[in-house]
View 1 (cartoon, rainbow over the protein chains, first blue to last red):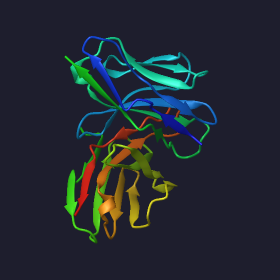
View 2 (view 1 turned 90 degrees about the vertical axis):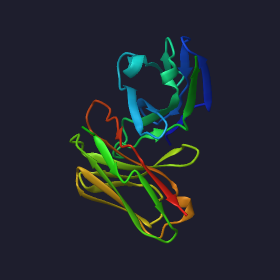
View 3 (view 1 turned 45 degrees about the vertical axis):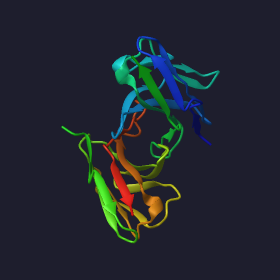
Length: 116
Length: 115
């Protein structure tokens, strides 16, 4: 069965410092991996994805994520956090070999708080 | 130009009523989804339609009935509403089957409150 774990419910960072939001996954085959961000009272916005190839993927708003197959992780990173990055972040996985119509499995979300 | 839109944004109703939420996407995607986000922000897929055909139906009470009149629209009808149905419902769409991974694009959500 597919699953995603985001081990931290909350991450606190000072503005200007680097940030990391952790994600580990479990799939039977090869994964597609995604990060989404949700601002208060808004829908989820797609940030970036890993499909294949380079393990470091870059996305919107200066975010990047590193795929690590041996550790089954896909941590979200940003070199310098902004107060406006404060939001709820979701990691999601999809099994490449799955015929379940594009079904994503989401982690439980990590609340990122960036203080000035 | 909104990619995935939902109406209404807010829905307040009493137990036992029947209500519908509508969703439209203008991205030309072939697959649409309904998700439920509970009070703890946990996101759970409910249904998925691919080209008007039901693909995913995740242990959802049969009081919930999706309908897809065409591949750009996916509506959700809920009968006999219960207190536990209170949540935010999100519609999403994606293009499945491409080598690009099929990321999903979400609507703004419908906050349903059952009293």
